[in-house]
Image (cartoon, rainbow, N blue to C red; front, side):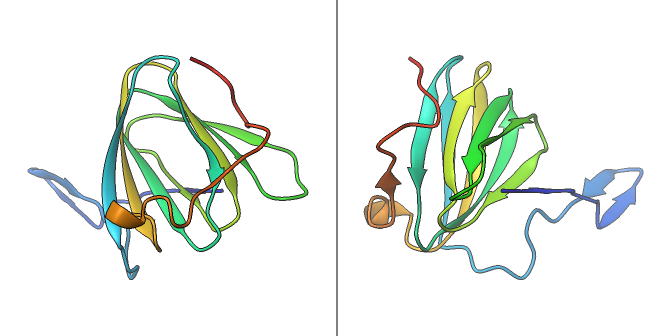
Length: 127
């Protein structure tokens, strides 16, 4: 898991322009909504990298690289966190939230399950 610090590329009295990703191939962009307490994911991908960008609300991301302890990160609006191949991850809505997921690899549309491997022991349990 990698938390990415976003810096505006341009700023003036009208506002800011910030590149979320640069020089990446994106195969899908997915919007995911959360109700408070909702748990999503509890899986990993062998080939896919995901960039998770919070639009509204707050989400707890729990990630685990094989052989290491799980790491918890609270994400708020404007936060961008990447999870790479083989990184186990789960997401919990700490309140109602809206998330954009930018995906590089076989993860979007009809390929949604082709690179998704469910965890036998979930990182997070919930509602």
